[in-house]
Amino acid sequence: MSKYCMMVRDLIDYYGIEGLEGETLAWVKGHISACDECKNYIPDEKAKKLMTEVDVLSEKDKKLIKKVRLVFYLGCSFVGVFLLWISLWSILWSK
Ligand SMILES: [Zn+2]
Image (tube, rainbow, N blue to C red; front, side, top):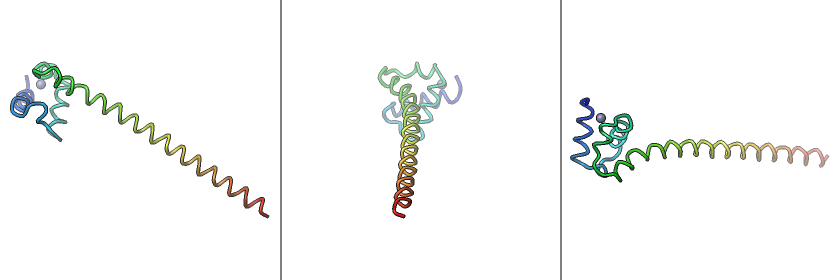
């Protein structure tokens, strides 16, 4: 058990899982994902699930957002090329 384990357990004892927020929550989560001893220290099953699942979800969300953004940009550039092509044709036909 490292000094970080002591800090994590102190934080959990003092604030509870729901009381943690921001950087503290991120840090505790990061430690718990790497430390089974502290994972097992969380008494509430629901809180344990919350601590271990949120990171996986957000990682999935990040990938999804990247995909959606890529499709969006591809769609935009396709529409841009299409409009350019249409305007070129209309210029050619108007002459
Ligand atoms: Zn630990």
